[in-house]
Image (tube, rainbow, N blue to C red; front, side, top):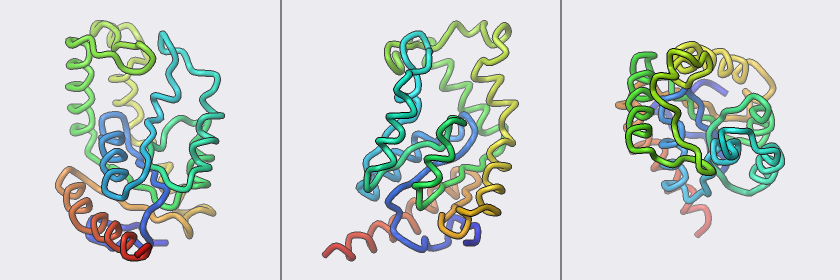
Length: 198
């Protein structure tokens, strides 16, 4: 199946949707929006993965297996251990291919605001002190910078692999294309889905 852009019609009404992109690309916002437009359930991968004190939840993979058995869902395509499982059950993959500067700016703003507000995230976790960006090699901001090109390689592998003929992959570069796709092909796919169940 060819790589789709912001104006290309979707080949089918999406029922199981993954959103890919680096940290700060807006994966959760997009997955939540797609779920709302299409009437799908939305589950945030981070909420399944992170236990108290940022420790991985032992039930994570089992919870993801339960998720993919549902008829419809939207979520983020992340965490190495479950990416193959998610992809094997998805019918649509939305790739947020924003410039590095855009993603990094977003993740910096989000991280600072969460820390200043002491915003509780998953299972009681809050962002660590801002100075840890200099002391923690795995800090989210440093990871976002290093990992920006990883998604491009993963998408290339999807298109060239066994799932490439089955999964519709949509590439969106920048907020203008995101808005264009949501107002156009995504909205029309939702309308086609509604017509098919009448």
